[in-house]
Length: 104
Image 1: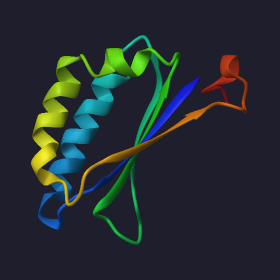
Image 2: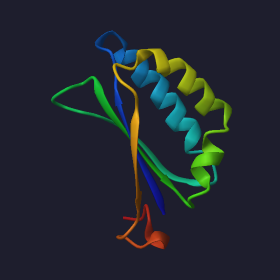
Image 3: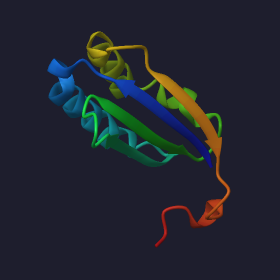
Image 4: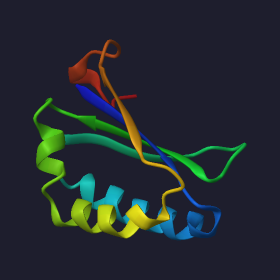
């Protein structure tokens, strides 16, 4: 699995709007064949900070995701809401093994 964690710091006045746009993007993203998981997380201590936890089947799938209409809509919608530029960190899966990803 190819895992991307996207860190977003949103201007306080846009928290609710950012969250709604991100949930819409996440719901559509889960329909993509290359996406195993797409979580939207909000920090408890600072609700203006979010993490998007994206799990892809392959390292090529994020590029395919960025070509979708829902991602492009999300990006253009949330860009002016950012308190600072988004950052990301890329990981590879260790455990559970890839074939068991998402199983209880």
